[in-house]
Image 1 (cartoon, rainbow, N blue to C red):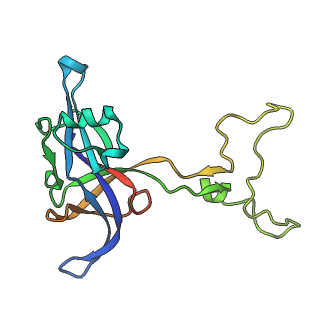
Image 2 (cartoon, helix red, strand yellow):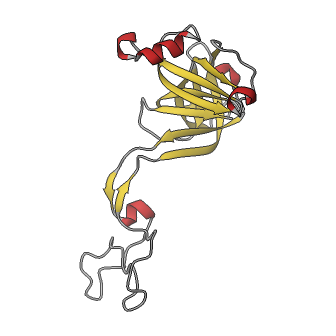
Image 3 (cartoon, rainbow, N blue to C red):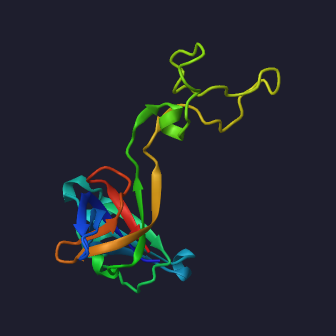
Amino acid sequence: MKGIIGKKIGMTSIFSPDGKQTACTIIEAGPCVVTQVKSQDTDGYTALQLAFGDKKEKHATKGDINHFSKAQTAPKQFVKEFRDYSLDKNLGETITVDIFAEGETVDVVGTSKGKGFQGVVKRHGFSGVGEQSHGQHDRQRAPGSIGGSSYPSRVFKGMRMAGRMGGDRVKVKGLKVVKIFADKNYILVTGSVPGHNGSIVLIQK
């Protein structure tokens, strides 16, 4: 595995030489600093801990300051661990968007937008009870029956019902890297990425 921490900037479109338009998401990926190297001998597994985004020292705890000082870097806002990192990196080294190449596919992990309390049509894709005919009134988006009567006399666990929607950890797989701007640390991937503009995402390969 290889990966990097990034921030979602927004969406745009690019055009291929033959005039085909492709919607893509702009992500500011890195630079990330290696703040800890875990090995099989010391931790029982291999991983790299990456840090992204500067934080004022007055807002960091003494433990954080000491931890980041081992990598000779300032305190960071976001820290993420990547297991079995395919690239050999040492403590304090920097990882940039150059680890990816245009044309390869990546997975992007983010937190989806919170949508509040939603009904079954929006939350689960129900089609509603039916039309307005035959005496039905305001039933188009209703969930319908949720269980039996005398048997089993209860609602089964996991029944899809109305409730809070969004705010979940989502992984979108197989997004193609369309363009890389190494000077600005920008990477453009096809399609939409979960989360609002400015949210933190993980790009994995």
